Amino acid sequence: MELRKLQALSGILAPAFFFGAVVYMSLSRPGYSHVYNVISELGENGSPTASAASITFIVTGLMIVFFGLGLHSELSRGSRRVWTGAVVALYGMLDFVGSGVFPCDPGGASVTLTGTIHAKLTVLGELAALAAPFLFLWDTEGRGEWGGHRRLTLAAGAVFLVLAGFLQYTLPGHVPGEHDTPVGLAQRLLVAAYLTWIAVTGAKMYVKTASRAVYTGDTNRSHLSNSTYAGSRPSIDYANIQPKITPGRLKMTQKQKLTLEKLDEEARKRLGELKKAGAEASVQLKENLGDLKKYTDAAARRLSDGGSKVGDRAKKGWTELMSKAREAQASLQESVEKRRKE
Image (cartoon, rainbow, N blue to C red; front, side, top):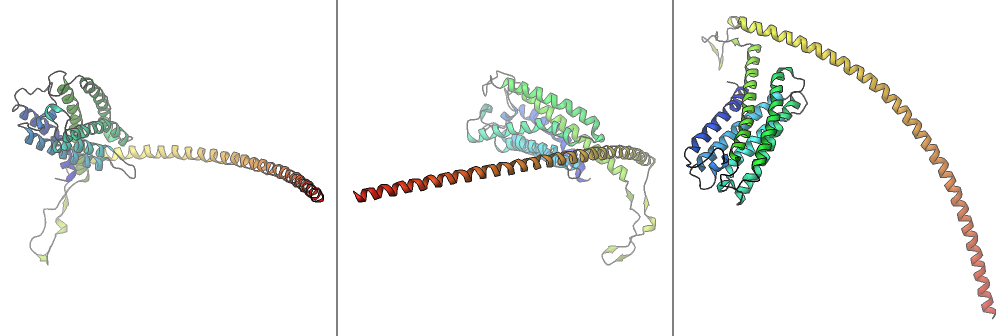
């Protein structure tokens, strides 16, 4: 199985593995409530499920990171940067791997350094998850093959914001370790929404990857001659290698051809629009350059005229100043001569 399929499967299976493990671990914690206790409390210091929770968080996080890397490769196109895969991987690393490495304090509190780091990483991970659907819409703009999933992602982004608001509403009145506000329920709904979107996106990516493999077509290379070898290389009977094309694959190839023709027509249309816009921009630029030259010439003339006037005034002032200085010097000499005579 190729790497991209494995990465897609990782995104599909991570949510099921995580929530299955959470339910199983909660059965070992008498008094633990999915409504009032946050998920991190399963791995808090001193908990009987701390080790199992730590492993669960880290494994789930690595699965999400693995999926995020595959999603990044799937969405990459040319020189345009894409962000969704990186943000998804960041969510898995901060919110899950971070929770496994830095467990929270009893009751989900943030008293010790480890508990504080846990809280900070969780907040950063949640922010990354909130940004993921909107970055996905940016990364898949103009890509028709993601059309249906883009609409689903837009709805998911709105749900994320609502559930994040619900979680924020439950936090101020919550006392760590107490059954007061439904903070556990709010957190689970938000995490479930995140992971569901990841699973659906992984399923879409898996289908796309499988479709590409079918479109490309596999070559039946089972007719290899094993009778002779030249050194360490097997002798291959190329005459018996036949392409394996089924009617279903031929139908898909025709469908792909129609899609490519449609995309080509749309690309030509957009290219024409770009050429037209470029010509208009060129004309406007020439006009702007002409206006700029006029303004520059006028400013140069004004500067030259102003400089001449300032120079004349300065010369006149300097002459007057020197004349007064000479008069003062002469007056001073007369005074000195008078005093000497006296």
